Amino acid sequence: MQQRRVPFWLSLALLLWIAHALGYLVHEYAHSFTAWALGCKANPLALDYGHLSFQNVALLSDVDENVDYRPIFSAGKGYLASLVAVAGVLLGNGIFYAVSRAAYAVAKKRGRRGVGLFAFLLCMMNVGNFWCYVPIRTFTTHADMATLASGLRISPWWTLAVLGIPFTAAILHFFTRLLPDARRFVLHDEAGPGVALMALSSFVVFAFFGSAGLVGYGEVSHRMSVFSACVLFPLALVLCWPRRTPHAAEL
Image (cartoon, rainbow, N blue to C red; front, side, top):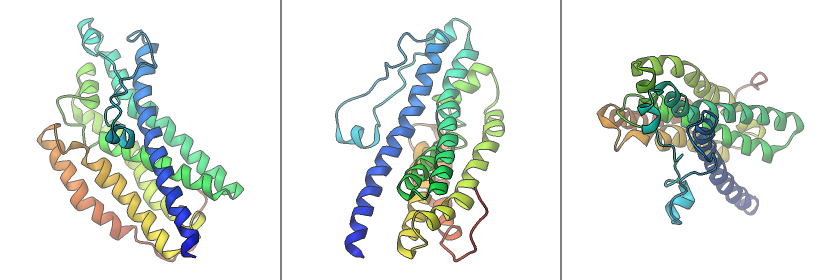
C-alpha cells in the first residue's frame, strides 16, 4: 500500500504545480487579451515572463500582464482600464472556474479519478484567486481592484459587494460540496489522503492565496491576510475535517 501511495503523492505535487501555473497564466492572459481586444495593447501574447529562477519557475512570481494603464487613463478612458483590470479574476479565473467544475462533473460521471483530481485542483486555484482579490486586496491604492475602482470612480465597497457575493458562493461550494465529494470519488474516503487533501485545500486558499496582502498592499489588506492565514485557515481545518456522511447530492 505504501509503495502505491508514493506515485500518487508525486503525481499530486506535479498536478498541483501545473494547476497553479494554469490558474496564474489564464489570469494574466485575460488581462492581456482584454487590453488587446479594446485596442490598449498591440500583442496579447506579450506578457512580462520575468527571469529564469527557481522561484519564478515554481510560482511564476515574476510573470506579469505587461499592460500599461497610464495611457488609458490619460486618454480619459478609465472605464476601459477597469475592464482590463477586472478581466484577470472575473474572466480568466471566472471562466476557468466554470470549466474546471464542469470537467470534474464529467470526470466523475465517467469514473476518471485522475482527471477528477486535476479538475479539483484547477478549481481550487481559481477559488484561491477569487479570495486573494476579493476581499484580501480590494481595499488598496494600487493593483487590479484599485484600478477597477479608480477607472469606474466607485468605492471599493461596491467591488466587495458585486464581486464578493458570487466569489464567496464559489468558495463555500468548493469547501462544502466539491471537497467532500472529491474525497469520496478521487480518494475513496481513505482517511490519510482525505485529511491531506482537506489540509492542502484549506492551506492553499486561506494561507497561500490569503497571504497575498501581507506586504505592499496597505494596512487593511495586511490585516485581512493575517486574519485569513491565522484564523480562517485553522477554522477551515476544523470545519472541513473528514467525517463519515452519506453521499452528497450530485454537483
